[in-house]
Image 1: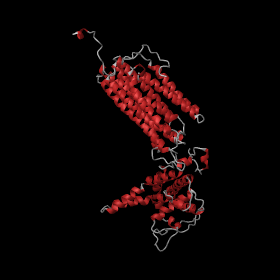
Image 2 (image 1 turned 90 degrees about the horizontal axis):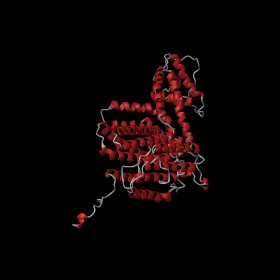
Image 3 (image 1 turned 30 degrees about the horizontal axis):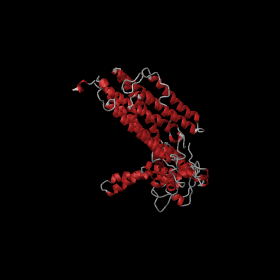
Image 4 (image 1 turned 60 degrees about the horizontal axis):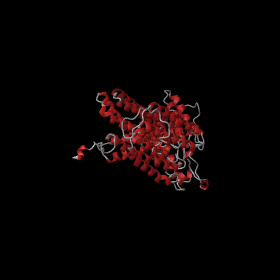
Length: 423
Length: 140
C-alpha cells in the first residue's frame, strides 16, 4: 500500500539513449574501423619492409592532383550530407532531398576521377601479378606479349582441333592461311623469344634489357622499311614497280650483314614473303641490278624445282610484283600488332604495390558505390514526397556512413599518394 | 586533442544524455578548415621534394589526423553525443590499435632474403654493396 504513495521515480530506461538504427550504424562503423585499419596497417608494414618501394609518380602512374581533387570532392559531399541531415531536423524535406542529390552527383564525380585513375593503371599494366620486377622478367613479359598479340597459340590450337574433326576443310584452310600470314612476324620475333626462354643464354649470348629494347625497335623499324618498299610497288606503272624491286634487292646487297640496319632487315623480310609464296626457295646470293638496265622480259614465273632461280629473276617477274603489292597490307597488319606491344620497365615491388593500391582503393570505392545506393533510396523517397520525420534516422545514418567513407579517404590520400617514406 | 582545440561557433552547451538535439554548428567553417588542410598536404608534397621525405610524411599524416578529428567531432557529431560513444568506440579502437601493436615488431623489417632479386637490386645497407648488383631499373 505504501508503495502506491511513493514519489514517482523516473522510469527505468534500458540501453543507450539513441535510436536503435543509429546504434546499429555506429556498431557497424566500429567494425569498419577495424576492417580498414587492418589494410592500412599491413600496407605500412609491407611498405617499410620493402626498401625501394615504388613511389615515383612517373613509374606508378599515381596522380597526386587526381587524389587531391577527389579529397576535395569528398569533403564537399560530406558538407552537403551533413546539411541534408540538418534540413531533415528542420523538417525541410525538399532541401534535404536536393542536398542528398548534390551528394550523389559529387560521389559520381569521385567515381569518374577514380575511373580515370584506374584506366591509367590498366593501360600501363600496373596490375598485381603483371609487373616485371627484374630485367629478365621484363624480357619474358615482352616475349609473351608478342606471342599473345600475334594470336598464334590460339590459331595453332584451332588448327589442331579442326584437323581432328572432319568436313571442315574450308575452315582449316582459313586457319592455315592466317598462320602462314603470321609466319614472317614470328620469325622476326624469334630472337626475342630465344632470349626470354633462356635458349640464347645457353648458347653463350649475354643479353640485357637494353639489348632487347634495341632488338624490338629493330623489328619494328624493319617492318616500317619493308612496308615502304612494298607500298610503292602498288603504283600503276610497272616500270616504277620494277625499279622499286631493284631497290629492295640493292638494299639487301649493299649493306653489310653486320650492319643490320632496318632497311636491310625490311628488305629481307620482303624477301621472306616471296620465299614463302613462290614454289621454289630462292637462296641465291644477290647482285644488285644496274640502275636503268632493261627489265628482264618475262622471267619464269614458276621455275622448275631442279632449276633454282635467282632472287633477281623472281623479283622481276610480274607475279612477284603482284605478291609484293599484296604483301603491303599484311606488313601493315604485322606492324599494327607490333605497335600494341611495349617493352615494360621493371618496377621493384611493383606487384605488391599494385595489390595494396587496388585492395585499399578498391574497398573504398566499393563503399562509395554502396553509399550511392543509399542516397538513391533517400532521393527516391524525397521525389515521391514520402520523405518525412520517420526518415530522420535514415538520413542521419547515411550521413554517418558517408563521413566514414570520407574519413578513410582522408588517410588513404596521404598514405598512397604523398608519403615517400621507405622508397 | 579533442577538447583542447577551439570550437567553431557552438551556440548551445551539450547535454551528455541527450541525442539528436546537438547545438548548431557552423559547418562551413569546418569545410574551410578541411580545404586549407588538404591544400597544406599537397603543398607539403610539392615543396618537400625528395630531400625531406620524413618531414613531409610526418606533416601529411598529422594533417590527416586533424582532418579526421574535424570530420568525426563535428560532421559525425561525436563531440555532442552522450557517454555511450566511449563504451561503443573504445573496444573497436583498442582492437584496431592492438593490430598495429601486434604488427609493430614487423614494421620496417625486411621481408626478402639477401639473395632475392629485389634485395640484390636495391641493397639496403652500405655493406650490401659488396653483393654484385645488377644495374638498377631505368625508367623514363
